[in-house]
Length: 123
Image 1 (cartoon, rainbow, N blue to C red):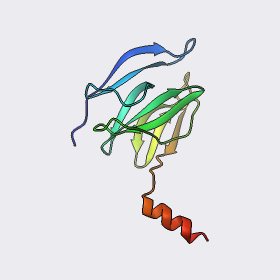
Image 2 (cartoon, rainbow, N blue to C red):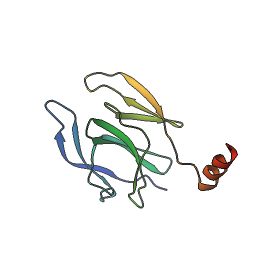
Image 3 (cartoon, one colour):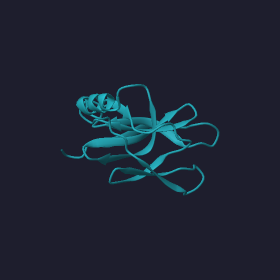
């Protein structure tokens, strides 16, 4: 798969003196849902990863560039400006005013059979 074209529009400051979040476009189309995203977005393993602005913080999500479906991969974080993806971990800046870096694992959903087997194996 070739890397999609990622662009931004309508970037606005979130809160008084906060980061600028805007509308994300992947190959000229917006992901599903009415969300604002914190630049930059990263392309990795056929998916686009972006930090979604939500009340009280940010949630890192994975977006399929073909279907434009968004899936959350982290819980809500106080701040998350994406820097890189290293293996199965997202490297991000965790504080708006500084350069403090953190890492968080990308949680991928288990296939249905694995979930079902795990459920019955615990009895």
